[in-house]
Length: 151
Image (cartoon, rainbow, N blue to C red):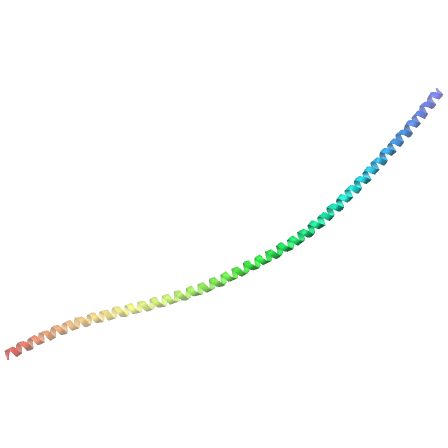
């Protein structure tokens, strides 16, 4: 029994030693995989950071180009708007001047119409007066002719 107990103890110690070695091997292989994974992930991080820097610089250049284009377009828009405002101001001034000229012409035309109506009335009166004078003259000639015949 003592020998069986010693065999069991030896077997137990052997088994323990084997399990410890196997555990140590598993630990070492896990550590190696962990280190390899860490190196791989660090390389991926470095690559991604490099890519990010490239993209950032490209984006900065693109943003600068777009900002320059926007500033140019904004300047052109402002110039076009100012030009339009100036042109409309000139056209409004021309329209106002033309309207003033038309109002002056309309006033002058109304004055001419009034004068024409007055002259037309004067002519009618003159024609009426002349008709009366011609009638009187004709009557006087008739009287004169009758007097000349009677005499």
